[in-house]
Length: 102
Image (cartoon, rainbow, N blue to C red):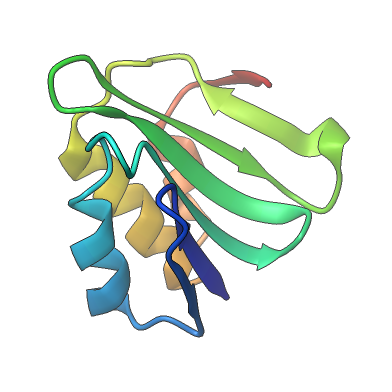
């Protein structure tokens, strides 16, 4: 896996603590987005801020499997839960949100 923060930070093979620490920075002027990828075409991504909320996007294997949360005002805690479940290779996080094609 690779974790990328919008300010250009890149962590190859991150542990959960590194991801969590960096997710707490999403929404700052330099770190407006975070992406956790399994491959170039499979990833989970978030953007937003604490005031307006966050959205989550994910893609699996190809661009026709690109999804965005309908709720664009998610609290950071829900984003963290989704990223942790994705990191742990669980599938249940997809059922926690409502999705539309992205």
